Image 1 (cartoon, rainbow, N blue to C red):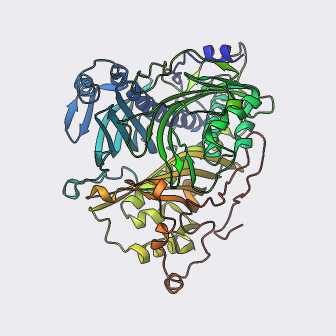
Image 2 (tube, one colour):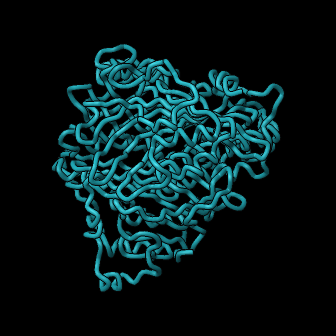
Image 3 (cartoon, rainbow, N blue to C red):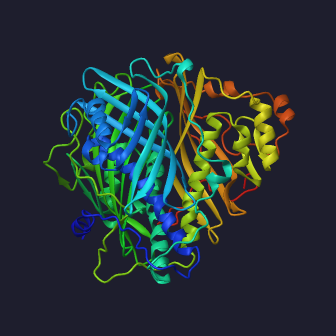
Length: 630
């Protein structure tokens, strides 16, 4: 069964919307087209990042318009041929196609804010890019920046027409990242708070599709979001050693294949596979963060099978002991059961980089994790791993497009009433949550407050909870003033790995995202990380998606040089304030959860969702709230 499903997903096609006479369905055909476009644009940019990982420069260039313009710090390149030549020179080191095995080129595109033009024929996106690069035995480097990307619909396909890079930081791994304050250029916002919350423009479109066909496509978009939820929930459960919940996501006869190692089959086998990550749960000082980044989600047009390809960036280790970086390609194949739930049928893991935190990825080690003798694979694999620096990644990459051909002959996608509104909530929740992160990066407090609902609430770190848009704004200005950011310091709030739970008719939703905050200063010694979890509530208010509630739990805080293994348990407490100061702010409610990053102590972690397959409740369940803990 699994082999047949994998073969069915190997030839994925983009299915453009046919256009003919004016429909009598009002704006509905355009809304289905436009939400499809947003998903395709996110998929396109993730595809770009996956191609860069493999060094497929020609295929990257094919995603561009002929007259594309790309602007970097090191120059402006006009036209597809110039951009391709720069990719080959700057990133391929002269290789026309591919990377040398001793070269590492991880380009992670995260935190999208996508806005469509009024006519649906163009769009603009804002992204964070995090780059980990290396030449084995010689150098390892960091780089990060913000991209503003212009997309245009050309001949039925979305293409990249313009890219502008705003450099934020870089530096050798050995010394840490930093930036030059005099040269820092912060990316302008291509959207207002309202525009970030308007996902679908009000327009009509001609379409040859009938209402049932449009409903089927809207239902596929809803399932497309639910599929991504499963892969992202897998990552959150793995972080915390919640092995029962991980196993619940799989079919009883599913399998996990680790390239270069073996295959673990059935739920008992999957539980044995998990033993490589340690005992169930987290012990004091144990960190097992494994963000699932840059997902490419593809669903068959009959709605029976889907795949998700993601890059897992591992940040693991023991406080007071060793720490490790790792990178793994995860390829999930999922099937939809008779109960309507998606489950994982197979997971292919390709571990391609692992390094000690002390040495960095210029000195990689074996990426295959050891496992207890009793937790061996059901079948060993003789094929070698595609691991840096011995071999390049040659695993085929799926084609461009979010829809694949039907898997079951004659099958049709089931229709969910009101699917379009519920599917839109996935993108509305992600857009405004990420817009919030970009606004606080630049201390744009009035814009920050404007992405909240009129009765929305926000936790102000270390102070308390403020309810109502005016109160949110007042607390931010009282805490930070209105002088704007200092160029000598950047707090870069990268938010990723969304799990969205849609409520009611699609007018409300929860969204869980991961905070990967990188702080940069003019001195590399000031480089630091903050890891945490956002649990947001979003609502559609007057046709605009806004944040109704923002809960943030910091998990760990560490200097880059010493890493999480040497994190001071009291370090985040230095940001605290006295009871007298808190009283001056007069919060409407206290913070819920932890006030300070608890690591190396392992604190309870709230979830807004039960297990999406089994319904297993988390130990700490977060419910819809007005800002008071419930």
